[in-house]
Image (cartoon, rainbow, N blue to C red; front, side, top):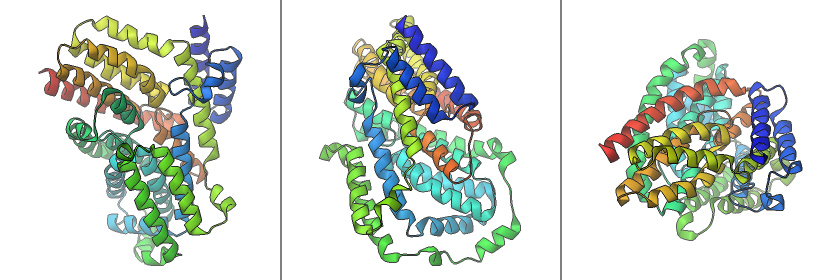
Length: 428
C-alpha cells in the first residue's frame, strides 16, 4: 500500500511540474512533505542516506560552482566570450549553435556536465541578447550536448561516478568503452540539430553588424581579478580530474574553490550570494526526497528486478533491458538517484554473467541508458534543471515541454545508436 501511495504522490507531482500549473519548487516541497507525512521516506535518514535521501554531493557541487561563476561574472569574461563566439560564427545561427555545442561537449567530460552548463549558459544568454535572438534553442542544444559529452568519462556525468565506484571501473575504462560511441552520437546530434531547431534560427544582419564592430577586449572590466579567478578555476578543474587520486569528492573541491574565489576577489559576499540559484537548489532537494519515497517503498527496485527477471539468462536481452529501461526510467526519476538505486540490482545480475566481458557489457549498457536518458525530460538530469533556472533568471523562460519535446527525440535517437553499439561490440 505504501508503494502505491508513494507512486501516486510522485505521478501527481510530476503532472503539475510538466503542466506548470503550479511553480515547480512549490510542487516538490508539497510532494516531499506528503511523502514525510505518510511515512514513505526513511525519517531523518533522508538527510543522511546516500541511496534513500538528499544527495548533498550534488547540492554542494552546485552551490560551490554557482558561487565560482558568480565571482567570475564580475570580471566581464562572459561578455568577452559572447562577443568572440558571435564574431567567430559571424552571427549565423546554426554556426553559432555548433560552436557553443562543441565548447560544451568538449568541456563536459572533464568539468562534468553541470559545471560546464554553469559556465557556458551565461555566455549563451549574453550572445543571444546581443544578436537579438531567442536563447532557449541554444541553451537546450547545449544541455543535450553536455549530457551526451559528459557520458564519455568517469567524471563527466554524476551517474558515471556512482557506476564506476560500484563496478570498480577506472577513468581509462570509460574512455575506452564510452568515448567512442559518445563521439559518434555527438556527431549525429550536431547534424540533426540543423533539422531539429530549424524553425528557431533567426538572422538579424543589423545586430550582427553592430556586434562584429565591437572589440571584445573592452568587455573585460577587471583584468587582475580575472587572472586570479582563472588560476583558482584551473585548480578546481584539476581537482575534479584528480578527485579519485586525491580521494576528495568533487563537491568538496567546488566548495573549497568557492571559498578561495571569494577570498581572492575581495567582493562583498552578499553580492556574490545573489548570483546563487537558490530556487534550483531547493527544487533539487525536494526532488531527491520525492525519489527517496519511491526508493524506500521499493517502487524503483521492484521495477528494475521485474525487468531483469523477465530476461532470465539471456544477457543480450538483459543489456537491452538495462539500456532501454534506464533511458526511460532515468528520464522521469532523475538519473542520479535512479542509478544509485539500481546499481546493486545490476551488480547482482553481473555476478551471474558467464564471463567478465559480458558482465562489463551490462555495466556499459546501464551507463549509456542512464546518461542518455538524462536528456529525456526537463527534470531528468541536474544540468537540465540548472540551465532552465539560469534561463528563467535572465528572462528566457524554458517550459517543461519546450525542453522535453527536443530531449525526448534526442534520447530516442542516441539510445538506439547506443543499443546498436552494445550489440556490435559486446554480443555480435
